[in-house]
Length: 159
Image (cartoon, rainbow, N blue to C red):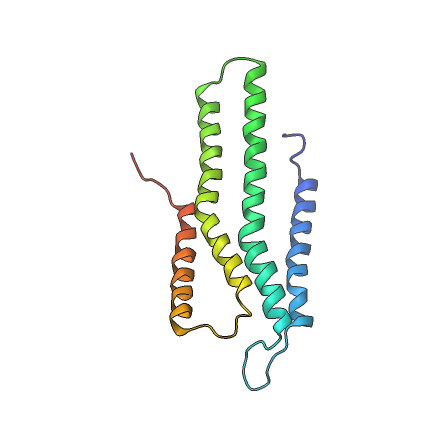
């Protein structure tokens, strides 16, 4: 791993993330229509497809869950293969395996409900006649699940 970690790889990764970051902002120039008297977007394509599907479901939910799950599983498999070839699992390796599995579990536990709610929100965005009671329930659910998602980053302070 140390042989692969060098300045050249770091520059390529930073450049790649910079290109993705710039690429994420390009659709705003073409899709979003601004009303001249107010600073609000008026394009339904932008609102529904880009902000609804790509940003809400893709960037906030799908990509983080998939990346953490894949790399956590690969870490778990690598630690298992590394220890099964030589000697029994030492305490540090066991601790690393537990940390990896608990991180995957926390992401799925706390981001899963938000993913379900965002899929529901994107699916019902075109419903014309929503009652005030239904809108209030959806707003309450959005507030709850948005706050609930931060449980992934909570820590225990036991000494």
